[in-house]
Image 1 (cartoon, rainbow, N blue to C red):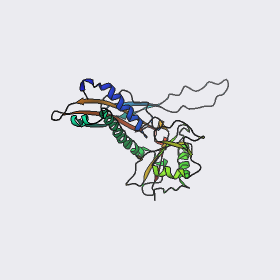
Image 2 (cartoon, rainbow, N blue to C red; image 1 turned 135 degrees about the horizontal axis):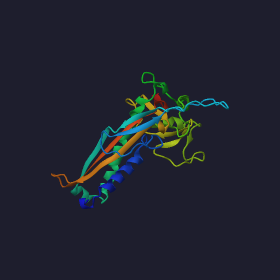
Image 3 (spheres, rainbow, N blue to C red; image 1 turned 120 degrees about the vertical axis):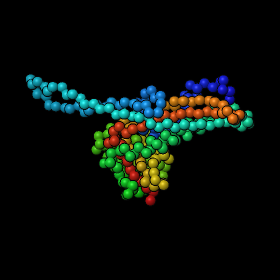
Image 4 (cartoon, rainbow, N blue to C red; image 1 turned 90 degrees about the vertical axis):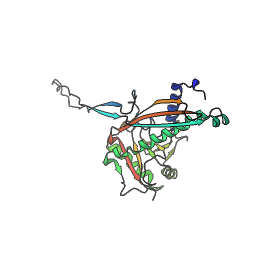
Length: 283
């Protein structure tokens, strides 16, 4: 690859595009992405404004209404506190012996690696969910079966109902072994059937208990147990990211082309009661 033909803006856009394709937790159908703004460096912040509830009062004919309510507001700060990078090189001899598009393939693999790294981080946000919205615990995890998993998903939906979470756009992210249990339940509607032929998002596999079901290997767990299956609405948490730097260079002591890229991001649960968590183990 000739560095004279290297256009940083083009490579940066390609890397971010591939990153979006690999995300499950961080995609718009699962997490809010409205506050990304203009992220330039680690430690940047995104201000999120919230307005309090509007009160409703009785009206009496020919009677003055009360003074207007002063709406309270509050700011939540999303800190861009994650800075992760890739830095790789391709030797000139290796490049000459391989297909001309070897660097493009390496960039795609870098995008996947950064996406997987971010997805693992996002799956750990279960710690910010309201304690009342947990079903099961690390001390006493639920052990679902093909006959009971759907019922536990219904329980998650009820927790969301009781928290006044919107019924539209609900999601649930589960590990593959839970999806296997759902496939054995006739109540589960698989995406792509006559009943549900919507265009699939990353990891989307169908509908259950009023929620879009996603499958991910990045559901947080402890040694293959105590999986934190998260359900909720995208508005309950937010994610902001940017590929801030992509640089091509020639290492001083190597005959090679090298690329380094910096991925900046941050995430925050803004409505802890808009999410629910099922702590589940295989046995």
